[in-house]
Image (tube, rainbow, N blue to C red; front, side):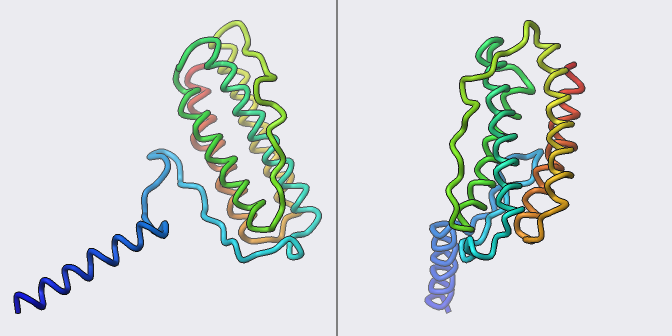
Length: 176
């Protein structure tokens, strides 16, 4: 009996270890935001419509722009809230979009906004600009979602839009 219990315990430990090694852990990237979706890598670019490819480009460009603005604010005013956690969330959003590009065998564009944006003169003004940016981001997802038919892309876009409306926007409204 003792040998059987040892074997079962060993087997369970091995299964958990293997699951962690291949990425099946259940850790989330943020306590306040759903973790980015893990996109299947079995899709290919021939299954992706031109409309969706354009939507992916628009989405990642907007996420790059938001991150660059938040970086500029942090560079000017220091590591202040809510800019640091939301900048980190924007990086996770970009990573989720890059996974979609990869899943469809497309190259994600590089970030044209990094280091190119300037922060305003005050934190309050930065917060007000961030409110506008998050509202615009949600509107962008409304616009580009209308032409997307690929379920995995729709799911990622909807989660990114929800993060802007449910997490980022209220945080910036509180600081403005």
